[in-house]
Length: 534
Image 1 (cartoon, rainbow, N blue to C red):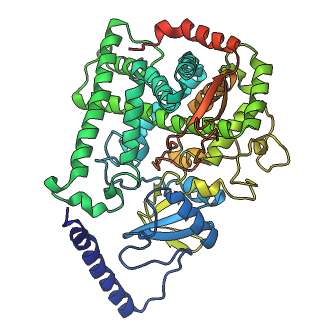
Image 2 (cartoon, helix red, strand yellow):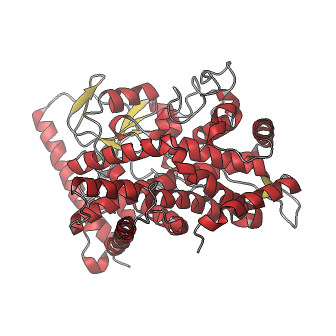
Image 3 (cartoon, rainbow, N blue to C red):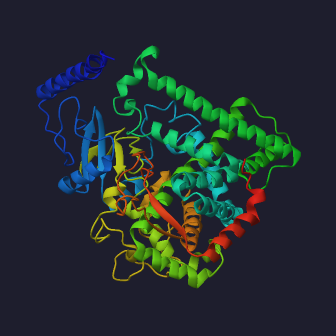
């Protein structure tokens, strides 16, 4: 499109230049003393600092600026003000203690009506929809955790190990599908939708990320008329298909419920039973009510896929690159579990495995930018005004690299969670380290009113899956068949979504012994009839 560059200049540069010029004239006439500001990189007219900010791996630039400008600084991008935090105590002060001010969500241009609609719980403003959905999800997750997610994690892990043993080359696909199957089983008793679930989650993440559609950074392009706007037409099709899929799953679940065929351990059963109870046994709902239910369960399910698939893939990578920690974890598993596959009940006896998992999420954060908050009204911090609608980013990548708390931050060091010499050590080791309530690293799940509700399933699913892979396999870097050299793994190559997965990489899985191979096959055989693989 030859006209693209002039069009962008007209849309962005001319109005912004005029506005900037008028503002400067007004400021000059009023002769006001400049407002105090946080430090930050030099700002330029029109663009602020968007011209040298990468859309991919943006967190590295934010860390670089934090090293220069300190633990709280400000910048702007095409007229939008940002405050970037790289200190956990400052993040807690603003996002927890002042959570009543900083719990809004910024507009993601490539999504329709996510702030006030019903489709994206984690991306809504604090509306009545948000309150109702969050309350329901919190209760559903707490009940499922109390029952160790009804054994579905262990059942699907037996399948996952079989997939790795029979087709190890496709371990990346198997890993995401594994997470998708667990969530689909919990949501609707539809484990066979695991692959579709994972792909839907990945596509949604792409659309909500700065690395995704260009309209998320060059927002005026969203206003282009229909024939010239491929982003809007794509999103209309994507969102429509996703919502139709969720709604159909919910309606199928209602039919199963009416026939007494829907398992009680699904979130759909929990929701439909509540409808029946409130309506004296009737399941009649309007189209809007069905869509609300479908989106509540559907987005809950989607987030559960993406928040675990990425850390799982990074964990496999860490084990291939750090055989000394792989061996320590395997020795612990052999001592505790022997010839049986690990399960949730082994949690207390596996501190080394938990430390390897916990360190994975610190070393390669699944949400390195942090999930953005937006100021819902004007505020002031340390004498500096923070205007309404300012976006606050607690940059996980930087917070996880504060050397006073995390010595040797660039290196993978599970011992920081096991050795009393480290500031992050906590006792008792039968409880710590963990994801759900540790004094350190809990910021990985967000802050305050916007804290992720999925910490319990992350703890259980990563433990069972990660421990079981270690129990069954030796992992290592792939070897080039021609040169005989190890194939390098770029540990920082990712899809750059708001919730990350690593880019494709190669590694080897070798079953630890023939006896263990037989155990993997027997475990799979014991659950195969109920896996719904078709």
